[in-house]
Image (tube, rainbow, N blue to C red):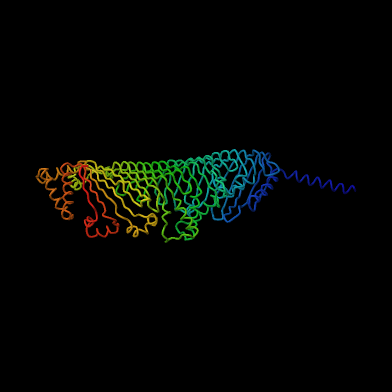
Amino acid sequence: MRPSASLFLSAAFVLVTGSVALAGPADDLSRAAVSGLGGLQIAGAAVGEARDEGSNVVLSNVTFSSAGARAVGVKITRATVTGGVGSTDALSNSRIVLEGVEGTGSDGQSYRIDRAEIAGAQGSFAAILGSLATREPFFQGASEASVTGFSAQSIDIPAMTLQRRRDARMEQAAYRNVRLNSYRQGKIAEMTIAGVTTTPAEGQGSRVEIGASRFVGFDASAGTRAGNTTTVALESGTIDQIRGTSAQNAPFSIDRVSFGKVSMRPGERSLVALTQTMQEIDPAGATEESRRRSMGVVAELFSRLDIDNVEMTGFKGQSNQNQPVVLSRFAIRGVSQGRIASIDFAGLSAADRSGQTTTIGKFTIETIDATGLIALAKDFSEGAYSAGKPVPPSAYPDIRRLLMEDIAIKTSAGQALGSVQRFLVEAGPRIGLVPTRLRAQLEGFTAPINDARQRAQLAPLGLTDKINLGAELDIEYDDASRELRVRNVKVDVDDVGSLNLVMTIGGLDRAQIEALPGSAAVLGLSAKAGRLTLTFSEDGGVASFVSHVAGQTGLSEDDFKEQIKQQAGMMVGQFIQDRALAERITEAFGEFLDDPSSLAITLTPKGDIPLAALAIAMRGSPFAVIPMFNIEVKANE
């Protein structure tokens, strides 16, 4: 080899190795990050300047953009990486400081972070950058690959401002002191937020201030994942001290909102995609197409989200009439695929314009099945159902239990108007819209007698101060016998007496019940009247009536009773032609009047009597149906 050639090769080698040496960790990380972002479907990645400052790697004016219809462009003024930097974008226990981070979506939504510090970073630096290509970084994942591509001991964001869309309106949300502890490939052991303030960006809307928030076991990757596995998105969370004004400028406050475990079932779209679709729909000016899209999102969310419990405590606000509303506690438990285990209200107090206040100690709805409603929403979204068509019975939520306790109504001056200790309704499985069993209990109903006219009307029954009553209902449909059995309908008034109804209705075909309300006319023709017993049990009402009226007329009680017996006999004789039956009824009534304990009237149909025939006969007079029944009256049994 010629000396000149050897000298040329040596010079070239020195030049190449010198260039590599001059490149340094900053250039290596810059090139690797740009390449890694391309693998995350992040387009247009560029680094304005890469330089080494002592042990720090500094990248300036970093820009890139996510792909797709909802692209977000990101600009980072300065990124400083300390320690754990090699020849690739892989980090090892590195400290990263991001300054001047801005993200702008193609739809106008944006965010700004003045400074973010990531301690103990492991994994891909490109993934850390790529996780910023979203409208709400660290809350809403950009993609599963970016969110799961790194880990960190902690992430601290002293301040972050979002411009986001809510209900087709733009609002600004300012976050303070956001901290993520133990970030492991998208799974966050704990996330805390010192406070959030939201204000309408367009001058209209609600303003809300939120105190400290804490979320445990938050999985940021769950929101980006579609797939075919169920993921726990949140183990638990709390949000404290919510204060603000509604869209109507009415103030409200909430002491705390707490969350239990939230899981996301598999589906075709991620939670991020679903929420973004919902945010794009204007609820005020929705078209038919947008309403279908909205219903599709709602149906998918409710069919895929499982929520152990959500609880709100200490709500204070105003009604549409600008009157105070207080709710001590509200909770929803066991939400899964359109079913809800329970919805609870406690300590509810609301006033109307007159100052009348209604309070409810407890209101619970249990075992709610809204799967049919979700199916209808899905059909609507897909065009299989349209507005104007009859709503199928299966779309109405099936509720099995309702309980209300400690209900009271008072005037503005504090005068009691009425109260109920307990009201319970329990229902069995439904046939169409009709429950196969229905039980109800009303306990401790009290209504004071405040009006002089009411007092005069009720005085003959011995009621001068208040009315106390209870009620029961027990109805069951027996499919085998095609009978509706009214086992008990009872109203019991303290110091007056109780009225109890027992009856059956036959000829009720299951298919006709399923077709209600459209089959009401046919059902009326096929339904047959059954045996009916009406019983009155005395508790002082009859004795008070006799004593009161006798005293007003100047008669003795015995003479007054005889007068009533004669009038009753004449009335019975007018409507019942069978003299023997009329005498038995009059005799039983007289026995009851002499020593009131109970009086029972039983009607037994003479053959098959359609309910439609009874309705026609009663148009002229209720007594017109008497010849259709055998009548039995018994006293004091």
